[in-house]
Image (cartoon, rainbow, N blue to C red):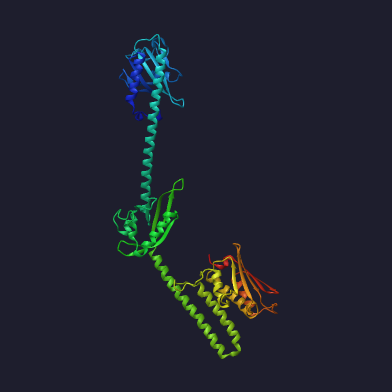
Length: 490
């Protein structure tokens, strides 16, 4: 009976019409729609009787609902099942009973539509009366099903409302306890929720920043940028992330990090955006101060390279016999200076044309003095690799030495010679191939000079790699293999 709870039965008047017609059809004073439960039977519609229920153990309908056809009792006093029944022997004085079973589409018996009389009906029911009672019983079941489905629907809607309210309450409670400012928008970007932290931080009245009012909280210089980034995310569905200055409750502006992600339904359609604003003002100021200090230190280091180069030049003038050695040393220091200047922290004004964390960019800077207008005497090919200041110094020394030797003895010592540097990365190591062509024939040196030792120091000891040389007839080929991890700190 649980699926057919009595409070869901709202069509009592219609059922009463059925019992009235059933009583008239069968010539009986009483007709009932009886639902039989575990301990009782309840009359959800009745004609000709005032009682609304009886115990199950005296129920005629409890028998009728178990059959496949209408149960007819012409004279209850002659039926051993009911002769001693209190409804027969007592004030109710039942003599005739006919009940059509009420059974669900799943075969579950519920009760019956019955007619009752206080006098026997030896003839029972006519064929027309049987047909009519069966038809009326089907009508009762149709109405019970409609009421059941409506009740299920109402219960489902009620449960959904309760679940939604509970979910919203939990979300708001959680959002209000977070240290970040939390907000959400409709799919079109309309802001309809901010948590308590937002209003506490901005000092704005509740609801005053809904809709497009939120953008007015940004610094005037950041508003258009924030709007453009937000519109881009709304159009593309990509996550939203931006740093901007937000007006604090005291009227000052503080840097915050804004982020938002879309929530999608099962079909991938965006149904809502959820976002946060995190105060990063102190971190932002600290990073700016650190950048200023870093740029100042880098500038002073660059000046030291210049001073050392100047001292070497000054000493060379005093000692002409060391001029060639001094020149080589000064060139190496200059190369180190160029490498340092390339990877050092930069301001927008001092940023090099090439990407400052790029191996191709660094080599391009180093080889710039060797290029000829309209002709790349040193060309770079292959995979670029990210570098930092740790690897820039040994790489600068290594390739400066190769370029210097090529200018003195190799491909760059003649107008038609050229060099190709090819870089290949396999995810574990990077192979750097220096290939000279078009120059004079080269022969292996008789011993290991300072330049060779410098290359070994740079590639092997500092970068943890290997160096292989091949003095081919048409030019030197040097292959340097370095672990990928040596190019950049984790």
